[in-house]
Amino acid sequence: MTRWKKTLIFLSVMGPGIITANIDNDASGITTYSVAGARFGYDLLWTLIPTTIALVVIQEMVGRMGVITGKGLADLIRENFGIKSAFFMMIGLFIANFGNTVADFAGWAASMEIFGVSKYVSVPIGAFAIWLLVVKGSYRFVENVLLVACLIFIGYIISGLMAKPDWGQVLTSTLVPKVHWNAEYIYLSIGIIGTTITPWMQFYLQSSIAEKGIKKEDYKASRLDVIVGCSITDVISFFIIVTCATILFPQGIRVEEASEAALALKPLAGDYASTIFAISLANAAILGAIIVPLATAYYICEAMGWEAGVNKSFREAPQFISIYTLMLVTSVMVILIPSAPLVMLMVLSAVINGLMLPFVLVFIIMLINNHKLMGEFVNSKLYNTIAWATVVVVALLTILFVITTVFPAFK
Image 1 (spheres, rainbow, N blue to C red):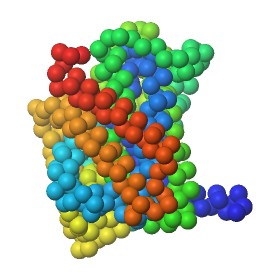
Image 2: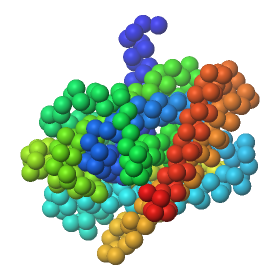
Image 3: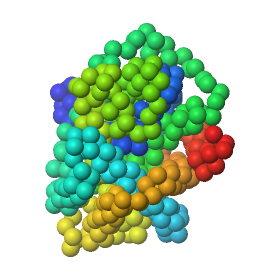
Image 4: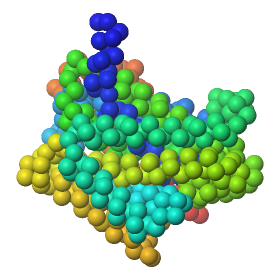
C-alpha cells in the first residue's frame, strides 16, 4: 500500500481517538494542571509520562473493541455481564457525568466572565448552541466541528512558549522524577492521573468508533488515531503545567481554578498570554459540555438496548436525544442558581469517577480477551501484563484519591 493511500485511510477514520483524548482536557482537567504548575513548578511534569502510557494502553483496547465488534462498550457489558451490571454502572456514571457537565459549564461561565460576559447570558446561549449542533447535525458534521475546535488547544502551547521557560530545567523535571513527600503533592499527582483517565472516555470512544462504522481492515489507522490523540492531549497538559510553573510558581501565586490562572497571567506574562489561556479554557469547557452528556446518552441507551446515535432523529432515538437534552438543561439550571453547591457536585463527581474507573477497566480487559468477541484481536500475553499492571496502579491511585477527597484530613 502506498504512503498516499495510507494517509487517505487515516484521514477517513481520524476523529474518535483525537477528539476523545483532547476533550478529556476539559475545565476540571485544565484546573488540575494549572494548580499543579502554580504550586509545584515543574516537579509534577514527570507524571505525564506514565499517565500517557496508561492512557494509550487503555484507549487502544477500547478502540480495538469498537472496530472489531462494531458495538459500544455499554452494549458489550450488557450482553456479556447482564443488564443488572450494566444498569447499576450506568446510574453511577450518570451522576458522575452530571457533575462533570456542571464543571464544564462552570468553566465556560468563568472564562466568559473574564471577557465581561455574564454567566446568565453565556451559559444559556452556549448550551442552546451545542444542543442544536448535536441534535440537528449529522455525525460527520459534528465530528468535523469538534476536530476544528481541537485545534484551539494549540493556544496552550503558544502560552507555554510565550512564558519563556528554562527548557533545560523543564526537560530534567520531565525525565527525572522529583517526589515531594507531602499530602498536597501526592493528591495532585493522583489528580493528574484521575483527570486524564476517566470512565466516560472509554464509553464515548468505543461508541463513536462504532457509529462511524470503522471496519476491521482499517484497524491500524484507527489505532494510530487513538495513539496520536492520547499523545496530543498530554502535550497540551505539559504546556499548561509549564505555563503556570514558569509564571505563577516563582511569584508564589496560588490558584484554585483555571480561570484564576488566566487572570493571574495578565500582569506577569502580558495580555496576549492571558487572553490565549482564557480562550483555550472557554474552548475546552464548551467541548467538554458537548461530549460528556453525549457519552452519557450513548452508554445509557446502549445499556438499556435503546437506539442511539447522532445521526438518528428524535423519532428513531427518542431516549438518546431526551437524555442528552436533560443533561444539558439540568446542568444549566444548576449553574444559574446563585447558591448552587457547585463544589460539592464536582467533588461528588470526582469521587464516583474514581470508584467506577477500576470496575470499568476490569470489564474492558475481560471483554478484550474474549475470543468469541475479538477472535485473533485479543490481547497478547505481554499486552495483558501491561494492561493489568496499568489497572492495578490506576485502581490503587484512584482509591487513594477517593479517600483523600472524602476525608480531607488524610491530605
